[in-house]
Length: 471
Image: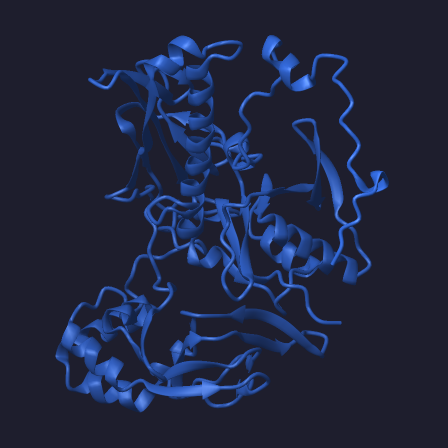
């Protein structure tokens, strides 16, 4: 084998360098650079839109009129394989059993609950049929429909996990279903028959007395919101007796204590001394740390189990979509449950699903100006993005509606300003010293919480389907 070594195949000699290279020139110049960037930063609309109330003493007490809980909360279950059981104490969420605490009797009632699995499209009960049992929904969605005043079927609502219907059947032998319940998805419910309830009641004197008191109607009158009634008289003529009354308050009002988000920021003194130009290293480190704390603060205001909005919405203010994806009718249902809704909060993907749902009806969301930015709106109420609202593995999320402000009996943010070494309202950066490794430490803290002054100030549409369906 021979190798062609002709002049045509030899590499041409490199041309001599005639000027200073750019790599060498950068050693003698200062580059133009940006401040440190951070992808985690979001618009944080909730922090911007909430009215913040000064909270001295670290706690905020919400005083309300005395409110009688009527036991319309959600019931929780435990699952063991395919078998589902109701937690005995959770039966206390029923109005009939509210305040009854005999665990042995509640366990006996729970043991008599029979499991029933259903499939999508199945009619659970029909309007006008005899009602002889209560239905507790462990999992799935059930729509309720009835007959309108002018004929035709009308939608009455959608029930989901933890809800129940047919409770009046436990005491009324002549009870009939006032609506038709149809399964929208497959799922599981538990039923307790009137005969089983009566058998347990007859063997438990304590339950007999409790039911008798409930059935006697001797409880203090309530208004439609569950508050103790204020006796009034209007439209009378002549010298009639004017009713006497007083406004009763809750004896143990709820108190919201300020929560805290903290971190210790560490900076080596050599970095702060030698590399402080053209940008102050300490200030940039502190700026990015504050951004991270604010992001965590908004996350907690949405998701914290003690004061987060998703966990503090009243059960009566939680609704379900009628068909899964959000529609204009669903948004109207959420909007009409409170006066003066200030804004909606939804995950950006949920907002995209709202747009698709509106387009399917030939509608397009309006746009309003909020703080100089154009945002989508419905009925003039802005729909603001918040990526802290979780998305489930089933690709469902929630839409939050808020009325805000103390004067409006709405939702408010809580903070305390005037902290030592405060760098922003309610946020401080306190110098903790320098350790033996010449590292400076700063304790960065922010204190916050949120309070719902009356239940209808906050509403949540749950289980909103955001995944795009197949065409």
